[in-house]
Image 1 (tube, rainbow, N blue to C red):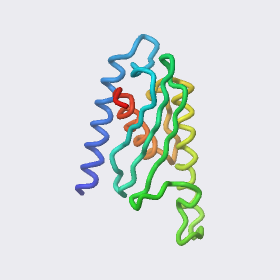
Image 2: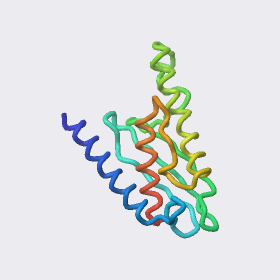
Image 3: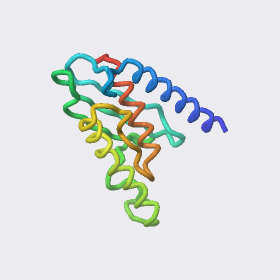
Length: 146
């Protein structure tokens, strides 16, 4: 129950941050970017204790690079082993869904560079928790503190 409430509060907080970011945007829908530099941001934890982390490079007033990684509660990165049990695929459907989230990490990062706005990065079906973590981490990174 408390984890569900925490998740809803995180969602509301993320919505507020994105709304404030949009309010500071120009007419083209882009976000107000900090000065040139490399910025990192992290999301809050999901119900399983996992969180996302972005690293964004801003050059000449544009986002030129972005990486997004999600970390499990135990501190391991979600990679090709994510969704396996003891190194083995014991449930193919679960593994496939887990790997969809892993694939989404690079797609979300690439879309941010392409569209220059987190609001234009669409969620991928099956990777919506990762999408929320991505948006939250981007908002954290783009607050302008290196």
